[in-house]
Length: 246
Image (cartoon, rainbow, N blue to C red; front, top):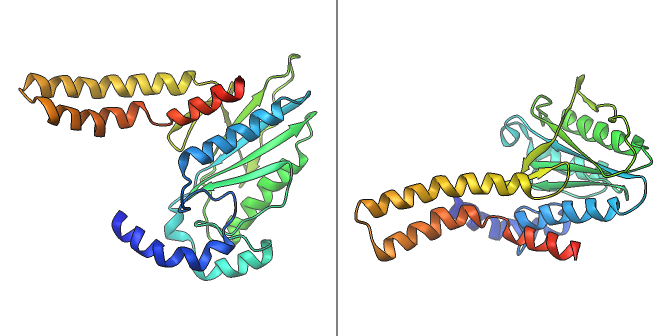
C-alpha cells in the first residue's frame, strides 16, 4: 500500500500542489514529521518570549477520518475558506495569531495568547468544529486534548476549558503528537523517558537474539531497523531546540 500510495501521489501532487495549505506537512516533498513539530515548537517558543504570553495547543482526534470525508465537498470547502486544500480537509485560516497545522489526519491549532485574551483562539476552534460538522468529519471530543503552556512568573488561574460538541476538552500535562511527547514545559523530559523505555525493551530483544547465536551483520541489521529507528526518532528536533536556546 505504501508503494501504491507513492505511485498515485506522483500523479496527484502536480494537480493539487498549488492549492495545498502551507501548514499541511504530509505528502509534501522534502518535508515531514520533524518539520511539523519544529514549526509548532518554534512558533510557540517565539511567542512565549513576549511578556504576558501563553500558548494553547488543541490536538484534534477524528473518528475514522478517511472513511467519513467526502472528496466531492473539497472544492466547495476551498472556495468558502479561501482556497487552501489539505490532504485531509480544506479548512484554512488567515489568522496571524493562531495557526492550524496538519499532518494527514493529525491536526492541531496553536493559539498564541497575550494577556489572557483567547477570544480569537476560541473562535477559530469553533469555526473548525463547525466546518468539520458540515463536511462529515467527526471530531472525537473525548480524545481531543489541549496543552497549555504558561511561563508567566505570577500564578494565574487555569484558563476556562474550550467546549466542542457540548463537551469540555481535557487539559493535559503531556501529549504524544506525531510520535513526539510534548509537555506543558516544552522540554524533552517526557520524550526522553519514553525513548529510554522503548529503547530498553528493544535492546532486550537484541540481547536475546545474540543469546540464540545470531552474530555480526544480522545483529547490526536488527539494531539499525528496530532499535536505532526508535531511540533516534526526532533527534533533529532536539538539536533544533538546543540551537534555539543557545
